[in-house]
Length: 263
Image (cartoon, rainbow, N blue to C red; front, side, top):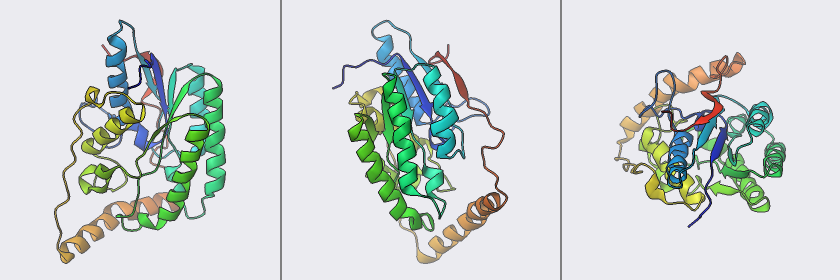
């Protein structure tokens, strides 16, 4: 068990780290998510030794690695956190012409910058998209990206959340209707995985139970996939063609390194 106690934590990333679509305990106009939940667990540990814990979440939905490893990380490191989570590249990987080697080089440079400040770094692999129609077409790129992340984490002594083999995420109950963002159950499972990656007591997090999928008849599955295509894939394609992002005009939900949890 890790005896390290972090007194400050800053998260950078995209919708995954912003917390979409975890509405459990969220405030109006924002989501909660695994990073907020992890911060709460870390705050409980810090409180046990009578010290204050501070947290900021700079993640914004739709952001590419250019932003996460650039302006977001610049802001994060200026806050001088003891722990920073750097999770990005998922939106880049969805693009057919993404250069995985270039993304990994960019991610490693970001990790080197963060580690040079003395901060500990928490990273995460991609989740395995093997069961998802269309998105599983990116599985090869996602697997290469995941292997690269493992190498970066090992080389620079980072903590690593292994989402690729997290069994809970192979249940559709862990995913929202858009099949891109996690449900509350999914975010709880990732929080537990993050605590485990940090070699901390998982009991500090909410119970992470994800129900198993129920069998679907062939026709039901066809209808389910067709509805997903109409309601989520088509709008995503339209945004891509218009060069728009779901995060356009949005700001980070927790831009300041403030006491956590809020009083």
